[in-house]
Each structure stands twice: as structure tokens, then as C-alpha cells.
Length: 453
Image (cartoon, rainbow, N blue to C red; front, side):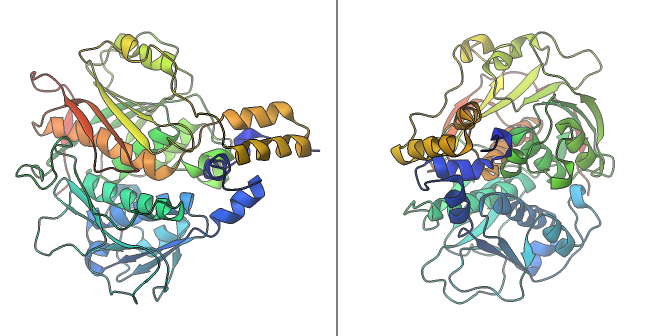
């Protein structure tokens, strides 16, 4: 009998187990090895910065959820323009992220199409989806987009890629409509039909110049990933990186900046190492936030929260930031696709918004309960098994999608758009978004830098 370390179990493996689709962790791992996809990137997507951001997001979120692998066909091996990997070849980055290069598209393999690649043979029994964008609009569709439209802004391109990976993952999970429906979301105005007159938004000219990221796990690293994709100049800005935890094996499923060789490294240093390569200046705070005031006069004006702690969230209004964005994700194998984004200060105080503890998973499916009982018998570690059962399940593509709404909200305010106090959706059907606009006020205090030409 061996000790069970809950922090060594992949969160997507646990999702499959908790859903009752396997009788053991080993069976769940084997099932995930049958989940695979391919990404076909046309020359236009390989050359364009937003196209590259979509490609790399699809690969990075895909390998964390689909353990059977992500094949990538590049029409052109261009030099990376995204700041996080600036100067590397696309093929090199794809490989570093865990994808594998392919010369020819596979038959009957779920496929994400970017730009205008060569069409493979009819996949027949597996989805083929185009991930595209137009301004601030992200679209995933089983049909190729029409030509001649405006290029996608980077947040929309990243959102389209994460939505496409979500569709393929849910297709494997048995959702009948996944991969066979059109999804369009406007980050400029998520409350309206994305085909509306103003849905494309203005060209992005300004980017946040400094941010305080609180929590650097699933959501915090998704924020970092998206910031690293945006068209920042060589000297990007300043980030305060605040987290007291270290990287564990379980983080592979959700943490976009995770590398196996960094296991045990403080998460703040992991994120700093990645973003400093993209031109950011970083300040690290390697301790938990226990409430009270955080911001001093020289600090960033914006706090971006990525914590799963109701006590911390209740204290947001005490932190001293004029602008706060927070994202929360759903819990359990039936709720992990949920996303809730809040902007503060709001009409309700933070102490009232999070009066109760965060929602957790409901009762385990009978098959999952039996699997945990068998794991306890085989390991002899009741405490470890109970701790594992209480851990959350999650996927990276949900966190990245949430980051697009959060960072997209900041960008919207920088460009004169209306802030939203609440944006709520589930990726089970992301076409249905509940959004509550904030009261009209003066210009947001955010701080900005001009995007690179």
C-alpha cells in the first residue's frame, strides 16, 4: 500500500473519474488517451499575430485536455510575433508546448481549422470546426468563414481557439451538439447578438500598462498567457505577481505556463520567468493574501483576481484598487464549464457578493463513489483519498476563455466601451450569456500603453 498524493493527480483525469466514466484512475487515464485532435493552420494564420495566438492557444489548451495528442499542420513555419515567444519559429513553439507536427491531416480525427488551410478528407464521424474572428467577435463554426472581413483582435482569436478546443473535448464527452453548432461571442458587448452593428468594436490601440495579478494558478496563468499574446511593444509594462503556492503535478491540466521541470517552483516565479521574456517587468509577492489593504500609491490601479477563496474575495473592497476584475469557475464534473466574471466596485459590496463559501461539486456518481472506495482499499490512505475527492476538477480551455472576458473587459474600458458588473455563462452552451452592465461613470482608471505597430 502506498501513500496517495492528491496533488499528483491530473485534474482532467479526476474529472473523468468523478463523472463516473471509469472505475479507477488508471481507466480514466486510458480513456483520455483516446481523446485527440489536429489543428490545421493556413499560411495566413501562421503569419498573422492573432492567428499565431489562436494556434498556440489551441495547442496549449488541447494537450492539457486531450491526452491522446494534438497534431499540427503548418502551412508556413513563420517566426513568432506574439511577445511570449517572440523570435522563435512556430514549429519550435508547437513542439515545446507538447504538440507534434504532421505533414498530412489524419482521417476521422477531430479538427480545428485556422485561416485557410488545405481541406482534409471528409472526417465523416468526427467534428471539423473553424475558429475565426472579426474584430472583437470570436466564432466557432462547422462551416468555413466568409472572406474579406476585418481581422480578429487577439483576445477574440484566443477565445475562438479555446472555444474550439472546448467543443472537441465536449464531443468526446458525449455532448451531441458539440462541434455541430455555430458560436459567436462579442467581447465588445457580450450582452448582445454578436452579429449586431457594434459587435466588432473599435481597433485595439491601447493595452493595460500595469496590473496586479492575485492568484497564479489556473486563472492567473490564463491571464498571463493572454497578456503574453497581446501586441505589446518590446517593453510591455509592470505586473505585480501575488501567490504563495508552488507548482504541483496536478497543475498540468490547468496551468498554461506549466513546465514539468519547474515542479515545486513558486508559481509567482514560474509566471515571472515566462512574462519577463515577453518584455514585462515583474514584482513578486510570495505569500497568501489574508485580507485588508494591498495597494499603495505607486502600485498598479487594477487588481485581477484568480483566487478560489471566498474570504479573499469578500475583502476585495478593502484592497484599495479603483478597478477590480474577478473570475470564478464552476465546480464538479457537472459544473466545471461555468464562468462568472465580476467587476468591482459594484452596486453590491464584495462582502455581500461572496457571503457564502464557493459552490462545490454535488454528490459523486455511484460509479465514481465505488472507484474512490476501491482506491482507498488499495492505497490504505483514507485521508489522501478524501483529500483527492474534495479537490476541484478543471480544464485549461475554460480558464483561458474566462481570461478573455476579464482582459477583454479591461480593453473595452480603455477604448470607451461600457463595463459590465457581471458576465455569466457556461461553455456547455456559450451562446447564452447573462450580462449586467455597470452604471455609467467617468473614464476608468486603468493606465495604458500604445500597442506595438
